[in-house]
Length: 287
Image (cartoon, rainbow, N blue to C red):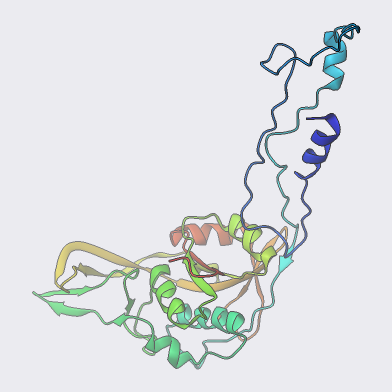
C-alpha cells in the first residue's frame, strides 16, 4: 500500500456536521496496517546483473510511515438547534393528558396531518384505580394511563405506554422508541440536529416533584400485590424542540403558545427526578 493510498484512505475519516445532519450511528474507522522492515512481507526479487538498493535507514523509514488515527474524530454538536413542531395546548382539551397531547404533537409532525386527540385516547391503555381486598390498587404508570386523560382527578402514564400508543398511529415508515436512561443533553444534541423532536418527562413549570397519592400495584391478573407505588406530584410530559447554551426549549402542552424556554440545569434536574424518561421516533420498523 503506497503512501498516497494511505493518505486517500485517511481523508475518508473526516466528516462535516451541521444542524440537521448528524449521522445516527458513528463507528470507529477500521485501522490500517502497514508493512515495515522485519515483517513477513515478501522480499522483492533483484534482477540478475543488478545490485540491491541500499537499505533504508530508520530515520528514512520513519519519514515514509503514515499511521492514520484508528477512530474517526468526534462530530461536534451545533451550539444551538431548534425544530419546528406543530403545537397543541391541552388547555380546554384534556385536563390530565399531557402525555397524550405531547404524543399528538409528534404524531402530527411525522404524519404531516392533524391526528385527532380522540384517536390518541382510544389507542392508549387506561385503567382507573379500584378497591380490591380492602386496598386501592392500579397498574404501574409504565403499564397504563392511571385514570383517564379526560378526568381532572386522574394521574398519567410513562414512556412505555406512549411508545405503544404512538406505534399504533405512526406510518409504517416510523417507529417510536423508548430512549429512557439517556441524559437530556445527549438527547438534545443527538436527535434535534437530525430534525427529530424528543418526548421527555419532567415537571410542571419545572417545579419540584414529590411523592403524593399512592396505590398497591396489580399483578398480571389485576389482583393487588404487596408493592406500593407513590405517584410523583407535578409530573409532566413535554416535547423537546430546541436548545442553546442557556436553555432547553419545549412545546409545553400546558402553555398557550410555543416554544417555552426552561434553564438547562433546572430542566436536567427535573428530568432526572422523573427517571430520565424519553421517547424518540426513528425511521423504519425496528421490531
